[in-house]
Amino acid sequence: MSVAQFSVEDASFRPKRARVGIRPALSFLDEDKAGTIQPHDDALVVTLRIDGYDVRRVMIDQVSCVEIMYPYLYKGLHLKLENLTAYDSPLVSFDGKVVIPRGQIRLSVQAGSQVVDVDFIVMDSYFPYTAIMARPWLHTLGAVSSTLHQKVKYLSGDQIKELVGDQSVAR
Image 1 (cartoon, helix red, strand yellow):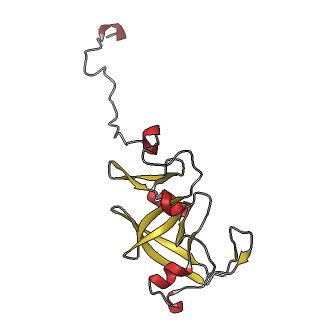
Image 2 (cartoon, rainbow, N blue to C red; image 1 turned 135 degrees about the horizontal axis):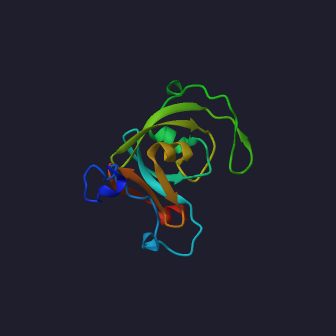
Image 3 (spheres, rainbow, N blue to C red; image 1 turned 120 degrees about the vertical axis):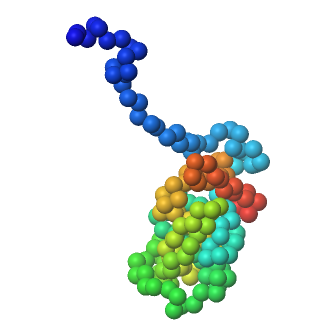
């Protein structure tokens, strides 16, 4: 039997198609800017549930490589020095000064229905926000953030969920 004798309708000739699950794409459109004051250069500041408490003034920073907790939140969560583990590496603050952290603590951070365990470095310095969520948290959550759109988007199952920033708090 030669190849010419097969037709496209012949089931043995049809290539098998792989089943491909379609996943929504995490992207930002102009419509995502609705409700924001434009133009702006505001930080992306959200509310997250940290260790069972709703925590306001959490800055999302794609540039930072560690999650930071400041004294206001540390005290508000009723954490004690004995709750901290040692963290010996000095960090450079936003103003360029070297800061020695008080220690490190692992806490759960909830965004919608997604919960991620986060290692926070506890700083004993002033910052206008209560915490900084950085690349490790974004990557673990599988999230994409946009300061322009004032949102964080992430997949939860087959749905795109979003955290909306609070520009009034950022200002």
